[in-house]
Image 1 (cartoon, rainbow, N blue to C red):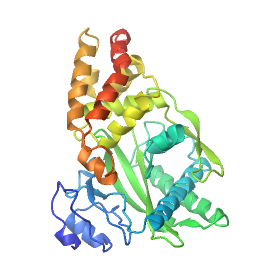
Image 2 (cartoon, one colour):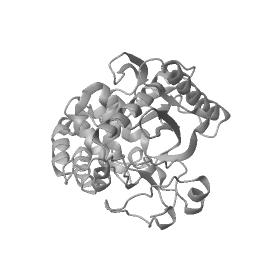
Image 3 (tube, rainbow, N blue to C red):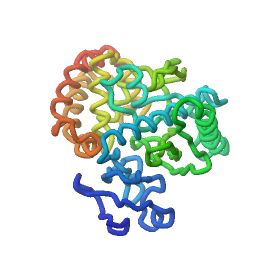
Length: 348
């Protein structure tokens, strides 16, 4: 199949992306995100990406599947090393105080292999007044890419190098979780003995933080060290997951999976959840959040929203996970029971 033969979505799990590279002209003509990059020799499925829904074919490639299991393991190890290069580059950059890490990399740092393998990085820009279209934004994105490349070259003498190419970076606008603007940058990397890959980094702007980030230690995957970065706390991470699952137009399976893990390991106060809801959306800010029935209605509505999670899209990346999201939804609601009880006390 060629890229011209790629059908309109939704795409069943039996659909395969073309093996041929997607060039810039074809991406523009077919309204495919310019950040789509496939892995040579691997099988990948088109996954609907809500952050790219402004494209006619708002896809990203699924996690690659390799016929050679050992070769696939080497590829994933190389990608993780590339991710570690980016983190080290951010930590050493002049923007370290402006970038707050959140997402799957943090869960891996907190919970180890119980968390899903991180395939990308997510940062929130500080302060919230920093606009996506400001001149300093381009300087930041370019600078982060350069720093990641520098770290990769300095690290090249340790084992087999994984080299990042800042000049090959591709950018695209994103709309993250329906609310705030962002910019996605995809950095190509190369490593000996495995197909070339990319690192995806999402930067989100105008996100008002209800609590301050904390300095967090993120270990390197190979156990040789760690980096210290500003990051969202587990409690704030869980509050955001609850928000997204409750109100996104396309709630994602990965958020249900992550929220379940977070909720079973950390406590979320009703007060912080209320702050997150009010800061994120006018419908919460102007709604009857102070009424006694708010807690009951929110809990019931939240459980109903979990029925609409895009679980099939999540399983394209992780086909061995449970076919139904029901067990995760049940566990999450049970773990959040103290939070929902606390909403009444936190309402002003």
